[in-house]
Image (cartoon, rainbow, N blue to C red):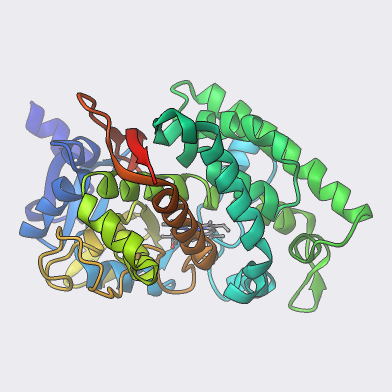
Length: 406
Ligand code: HEM
């Protein structure tokens, strides 16, 4: 009987030899390190059909760096368009722009945003990012420790977002509340309400920019031209919303794993403190080793991918954690080696590679510099342990730290 149910769940074009009847999420959460847990899949085939690949849905799973990169680059076979996802949530026919738009339409939207996310353009934000970081650290510096996730890793990227968007910093608690509900509320109605409230706030903010131009990024998103035509209201709202969702969970998650690693490797803390020039290569290696995002695509047309027949409409899942710990590309992949200079894809590859890559790396560098300059011997509080979640992003949820003042 169980076999009949199982067979019914697997579409006929999927070879039974490739079917893995499992929950990817549960498999990944075994043990105390999800990056090590998921990498057990490197011992199996490069392509599998998983009966519960995400949220109870079935689909393809790629397990190797080369294949995952190829699927991200090949937008003609693997589409990033997911019509309806955000629209259903916020009640307007909007798409995340540019992440849910395939080339060639993608290019014009991306071209509008790119100039505002170059290292040079972001230089203007450096002071604000440092000030946001210092303000948060000041609040607990005298206490000899903090719960790093709730007191730092979650609010910090929200501050950066508010600064980037010229929004008042005192909105931070509301933004964190909304983000928490969208990402983690068990009741879907709470998730939807939070998404609608954020959307409504972003809409009001956009309207204010119509009368008060001056911020180059916001001006581009409100008045910019795409392929010779003024950006539409929905394309503009899609950009506002993507900047909100793109840079919060990802940064908080990467910060959590990075700090957990530092807190369990005092010798690395000292090496980075002694020679701050090592912080930039260390950030690169942390991004590789803690590639937190699992993204996905939809098969756009019937195709045969590395000998496997896939049908239009199939979901295909791409855990970047598997790509960036692939032993064929990164020898001894679980060892964190800041001299490695890895060509990782933690920020994606192909047309949708991360718009915020330079901002994210700058944020990580600033945080590491600030903590190492102010605290010595950062470690997990005695008798405590950390907690994490898996899913679309691997995130640390609880990380109690203690330290000595530098
Ligand atoms: C450590 C932090 C971050 C990580 C690991 C990360 C990761 C990624 C990944 C993997 C993608 C590609 C997704 C795909 O192809 O399906 C992506 C795209 C994107 N990210 Fe990030 N990201 C981070 C920070 C940020 C920040 C701070 C921003 C905001 C400014 C941002 C904005 C975006 C946008 C707008 C896209 C879509 C680009 C496009 O479709 O052309 N990200 N990111």
